[in-house]
Length: 357
Length: 168
Image 1 (cartoon, rainbow over the protein chains, first blue to last red):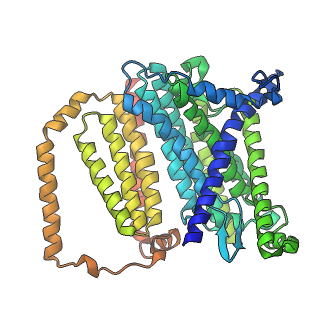
Image 2 (cartoon, one colour):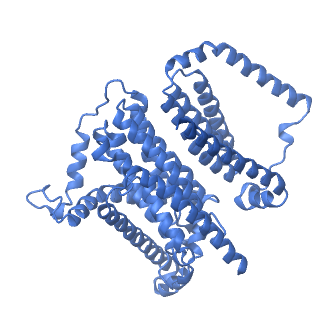
Image 3 (cartoon, chains in turn yellow, green):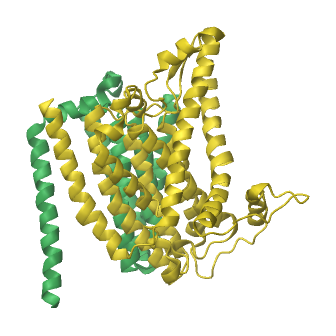
């Protein structure tokens, strides 16, 4: 009981630390550097401590100080309660969704079975969807409560877009569920020991559709019509300042990490190195004793998993700064008239293949 | 622990439902309804029905309530409509009391002792067992329901399309 409690607390603190302490400040810097790289500029490099700029890595600190000292502005005629609540509603789902994503296998550590996932739910994938669908409330409520027409239009666009792409995303997932026969993300991960059992080989179309839909769901370019600055000022968060504004950004960055984690877990072998099973890792680290071997294997798992996640974060950043923004009707047409039929055909073909096998 | 969670969830559900019917702002009322859905999902989890809990949030809190909110925002329903609702608060509480006492009376009459109900197998609410039941024992109702939904979708498309043709 006590051991379970300690295990849970350690895992929660670890994921919180990685997501909020590392990824969300660093991704702000990565986004700036990536945009600078793509646009042939130097990028963020001005914040310095005693003249050392450390390739702009002090910018997250400078940003934090700036944000905390800004005026928290609520526009005239806004719904104060909901205006304050909306950033929290859009940030929370992004943090919570990571609870069901496994970052390692199961190991015996000091006579206690450690499962490297915060909540090993039977309905893991559905849990992710449940909270992803709640994120759209944040955008639509932020847009409505700001008492600003640009914000309102942005909020409506965001929620319509997120609803549409959620449908397609749900249909993509069905292919993955059919192949692995479970909703539990830890089981999906455990089944990808064999390199050729990775989701990318079993569900190649599913991967492309899921990744695209996930970017659209996160409202990032080329799908950022909800905050199109050439049309809507800044969309649904036009009237936000200070910490609340940053909460929208944190939500977006954390969702990038969550998408990376989901794609890794479902399509790219989760915590597995190619051709290396957990048992092989334990055998390889036998020299450190049973507990030491388990700890080293856990470390290898975590490093492997987060390396893959970082790769997908980089991929999303590159897409963000490579493609121009679609028109709103193009976004909708892509979702309903292209992706939906392809996803349905994908389910059909997956079913046929399973039947023939 | 379980009992404590039950009290927290049920108290939250009742409270947010009450706030929903008494609130004069339509948007706040909708937010309270979402809260109610969440507490109900919590109650389902306590009953070992994880799948139902997840579906409750996806379908009701996620999909249906977003549409509710859309309608409220697009039709721009004002607080005036809310005030007429508030005037009926006494009627609301009266009806809650009547329905509640009816339920208690029915439970007493049918002589179901709540303590007699046995705990179900924890595997009962898993996706696998629910899916198995849906596709074996309850296949016909399931297919009928999906057929009805398909008819509703087609009907909605036809209704929406006709209006565009009329305006031309």
